[in-house]
Length: 335
Ligand code: NAD
Image (cartoon, rainbow, N blue to C red; front, side, top):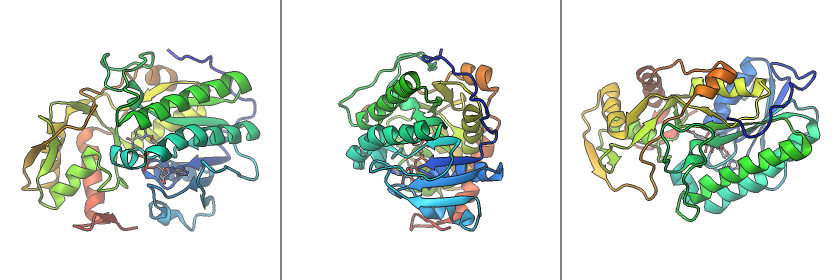
């Protein structure tokens, strides 16, 4: 399934890593990765431009002696003194609202930013894990999507800036592995949800929770019969760190194969919040995928990974966080 040959485990690679660099550390996924790495005893240097993330996501760890958060746009340069065992390259706008507003920034961080992150891994002799995405499959013609499916992407459609940035990043990562022998892994992340998603990031679950808690109608795109597979963030973090600890090149899909219609997601959010909101159907975005479900056979075989948090449990935890951390109406998370 993997397109690049696996490298043998780097001799002397520490597990857990002694020191990791996380790009996009102040974002939704980055902040959860930082938290888990610190919990496992890894020292972390977080790099973030705060373009779509915020230091508030790491405010609860600001006194942690193992964490250094540095403001830095990785498309300018990446410089980290000292040893590094692992680079987790997660910097990129990720929600459609963000990357449609930031098309050039998205292409630059996927291309130049990825080159800088790979350069850092090469200099330090570190393993690098690239955060790729199920969006590389576009509007898929194969269902569920295995890693050897090449995808169905419109390069000049509105989503092309994100999808093609990630496809380029995968190609560049593969080239650094093959040409420079950099120890790389590519993870294709399917829709993930959990605490610290921004209420206005435009993704379905935080939007629905925000709307339900405010008693507003839940805006379902089209007839809502399009499907998404949604993975709770703790499961995703476990999968990414399993890939980081392995010598697998990937790409490896990580996502929850349980498939839900968007309409079902909206109805479940209404039930989980106890809201009296109703569902309202609105126009469907251009090139919105009709179906999405990971084939996770490879993740199970290569990493022994499978999701453990079911949808109802993950939704309850996320709703609880939104109730505590989001100021109603203002749409701002408080630390
Ligand atoms: P996010 O927007 O919350 O986090 C991205 C972080 O990257 C932000 O903190 C942002 O400020 C930072 N960033 C952006 N450009 C930067 C630059 N040039 N230099 C330094 N920092 C920069 O998004 P997220 O949901 O946490 O996604 C993180 C990564 O995972 C992205 O690469 C995304 O493509 C990938 N991914 C996420 C999902 C998901 O469901 N959340 C799915 C597939 C892939």
